[in-house]
Structures are given as C-alpha cells and as structure tokens.
Image (cartoon, rainbow, N blue to C red):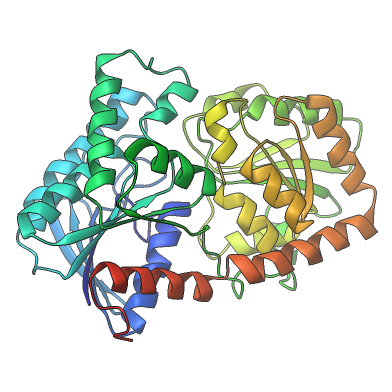
Length: 407
C-alpha cells in the first residue's frame, strides 16, 4: 500500500502519540509499504520548534524507510487553551496546503486528536478521493467537559461534536485504544463503520526488567533510594493533588523519593511540593527505559469523572511491560486491566488514604512487588507487544484499502 499518515506528533517528538505512530510507520515500511508521514515540525513537549527545523516553512526528510513531510506551525509552551488551539489551527492549514502536493496514497491513516488535525485529514481524504482510517486515543470534544473548560450547551462544543461525528461516520474504519471509547462511538454513530480496539503498543525489547539503571541513579543522585515514579505528560485528566498528598504523608520515610518525570499543562502544581518530591522535566528517548528500571513502583491518578472510565494511559502499559508494579487511583478500564493483569493495585479515584496505603504495601513487600512485576510483564507480552499490535494494525489497514490478503 501507499499510506499517508497525518499526525500532530512524530519522532523526534516525545510522548505516547509520537511513539505509537513512529513505531507503526517504521513497521509498515519494513513490511514493504510506502509510508509518508504528514506532520508539523518537531515541537513537543517543549512547545518550541526543535533546533534544525526552524526558519523554514516545509521540510522533507527520510527517517529510515519512512518519508516525512513536515510543515511549520505556530508553537507555544503556554498551556492556555487559546494558544494551544492556535498551534493546532496553524498545523491544520499547513497540512492541508502541503498534503495536496503529496503523491496520492491508497489510504490515509489519520490521528483524530487534536480535532483540527482530524478535520484536515478528512478534507485531504475527500480531495484526494481516498478512504481513511481514524485513530482515536481520546474522546473529543468530550474531554473539555471533564476539565470544566466547556459546557455541553456551548455553541462551540455542539459545533465540535458535529465535526467529530462527521469524522467518525465517513471513516472506513475507526481504531480506538479503549473498549469504552469503542462502545461510546458506536452509540453516537450507530455504526456502519468498522470499529476496532487496539491497546497502546509497547516495545518489550526496549522496556524490560533486566536493564541496568545504575548510571541513571548516579546521574540524578538517586542512590540508595526507594523510588515511586510517575512518568509521562502532566495532562489535565491526571489528579496530581492525590500524588502530592501521598508524598506529604510519607515524608518521614527518609529513603523514599517520589520521582515525577514529564511536563505539561499542570506543571504549575510543582511550585509547592513535599520535600521528597523530585522533578525531571525532560529525558531523551534513550533514558526512558532506565527511568522505568530504577522505579520500585509506578503510580498515577485519574480525576473522578465519567469520561475517565475509559481512559487507558500509555504509562500503564509501559509500567506493565517494564515489570514495574503500578499503584493507580482510577476506575473503569484502567482499574480492570491492573486487576486482570495482576500488575499492581487499583484504588478508587480521589481516595488519598487508600492510594497511600497501597504504595506502602508494595514498598514494604518485596515478594509482592516481584510477583506484580512478573504478572504485569506476562500480560503485556500477550496484549501490547509492538510486533503483535503492528501486525493487527496492518491487517485492518489492508482491509480498509481493499487489499486484504495482499501480504
């Protein structure tokens, strides 16, 4: 196939979306497909265009066997919704103009978030007269309701919902990362569209329990510490208040460090933290496996909202894959997978006491930590291994393009 992938993030951007689509693009190219990626200049998560990509409107590069056509966007480090929307709209315009000059593909694969990117991809598909597959990692604009940024009665929300429903209905197939998202989309469009659920894919060779993290510990002065790690973006669906309250409750444990690795719209919460909280805002891709290795346990908390019942953070799958036991304050799909896998402990969202007790229980019970690590790794091997997931993705793309059985 000739595949055009439209996405807002692609390597060397960091983050779950960039990793997922970069891995998929390289896998498809290695299988003989001609893969072109239409993406903005690298800018995530710092909010500024990376060195080597500045001062130009467009740029074409080869990353392995994948051709990447990049366009300028207005990048900003600000978490304000208006500025983020301006960033997204600038890429939408650039993607539309640049996409029309690219060779006509057999199929488009479109990342539906943020909404302007999905809209640009849909328009390109119509102008090029090709089908598209939509990748859905979160429900928009519903997400804006969960953070109180908008009400369902708002005119802009209703307009955005209509655009999203149109995206869904005209897709040849939709791939979500959560069974709950699949169910909700089916309710909204009464589907004639094919719906699939594929979890986040993880490279189990890159993230594995046997890695040595000694250099990472020395570099960040973490020798002789027990580490509770929270690794990933500080996005709005996460409840960092619970994590920081748990850290304050455990300040008397002299050898314990809560290690927060990442950045995002909630970075301001770190202005007032407990003494046992350390923050690393940025790691290279090469350092991420070591960060998972040094963690005794990982943790995250999702806000208490109906929408988050379906949330499945990439950090959950990375924790299981790396053999790192996880403690999470969550409900719905995330809690189900933690319990199903045996990879850790899930408590109710907003329950600081239970969250803290679960952390202590795992820290003080080495046998339990090892069992959770083994069980979580085994579950990840069966459910999220990158090779298995990419093959599944390839087959549904072939079917959507009418080329099923071609490989």
